[in-house]
Amino acid sequence: MMTKFKHIVSIILIFCSFMSIAANSSQDKKVPNEINVGLATGDAKVLSTYFNQNVELVVLDNDNVYSKAQAQQIVTNFFSKFPPIEKNAFSIIHDSGKENAQYVIGKLKTEKGDFRVYFLLKQNDGKQYIHQLRIEQQ
Image 1 (tube, rainbow, N blue to C red):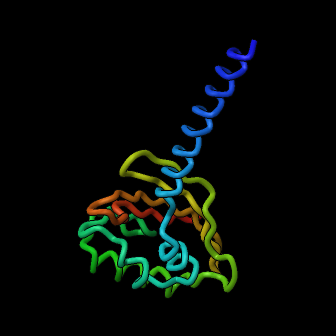
Image 2 (cartoon, rainbow, N blue to C red; image 1 turned 60 degrees about the horizontal axis):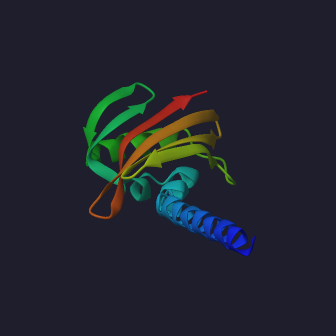
């Protein structure tokens, strides 16, 4: 009976260890706070520091693959037309991913209406980069 109890405790400890490892690896996939801040404050310059060299961008009438500089200019123009509200302008609704890729769905509240934001992050050389960004009116 005592060996059965030890066996059960061992299994529980192993399970808890695996859960702890899984929790730590999911924390590594957290969206960099600067991306959230860039979206919430309408700061395209901060946001663009996470752009890949080429970004698939869908923002209003712009739908193409753009260079990092072009994408920054398009997002800057978007934020000048649709400034975020002052508090809690961007919130993440859902995020998920695996190993070196993560997608995020969020809501951006602007002075002229709400937008759905989608972006795909991929890790390269230990840093996450935005490979795709979509900002669509709700």
